[in-house]
Image 1 (spheres, rainbow, N blue to C red):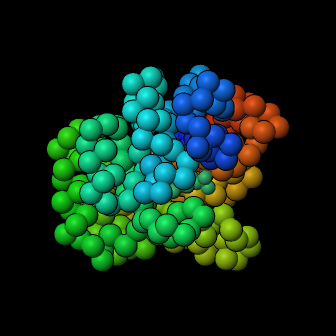
Image 2 (spheres, protein in one colour; image 1 turned 60 degrees about the vertical axis):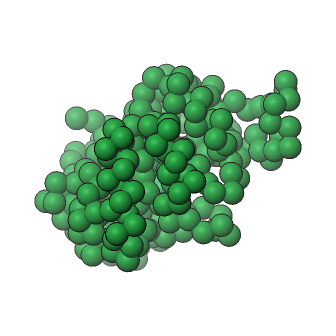
Image 3 (cartoon, protein in one colour; image 1 turned 45 degrees about the vertical axis):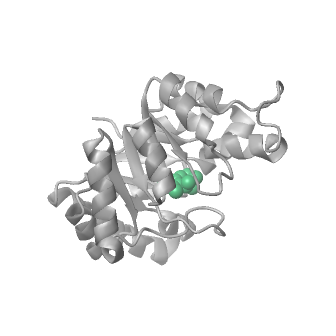
Length: 248
Ligand code: PXP
């Protein structure tokens, strides 16, 4: 099996909102989030990831419903555990949900979810989503307690937070890679699908490949940044090429 690529297209919506936030129905709204998703799929993405944030700073409800109808691969919805967003997820029935922590002020998702600290609330949400046909992942730091808690609340996947890995080089990156390796090993032993994401680039992926059992990577920022120069198609192709070198 090849390493799956989930493309996070939030930044395409960020660009759209920068100009058209107050004119969502204008005839000249661009860029199209749907067209971007379809181009990524055509270039080899395995799934399309969007984060519907409580403050709707990029992806809007209408994007989520439209993508659900039109994309040909899988939809991965990132969400905080709030009643409002859960209600939307239950209506949309994405293939996957990735539960993330969400504070309004942060620029992007800063740290992993404290699954262990909110066992009951998370177990209920996971149960409702999985019963509704959605497989649920927990976006966690590579810590044993969080991997075990993810299994305990009934999640079928974990997404290991690679932000610390990406932001450091040298000995610090090596230490974080070791933490990721152990977390992935434990997740696999507990029967969880192991994904990873945050800050991944064509340049840092080779270091990440020391981590075993990876099934899917979710990549957004570096891909959209690269696409400014190459177009989305080539940016996806370049990532796929590097990802093809992974052996689980
Ligand atoms: N996975 C999760 C759970 C995220 O919150 C993000 C950031 O939106 C990503 C993956 C993608 O990270 P990046 O945009 O740094 O590639």
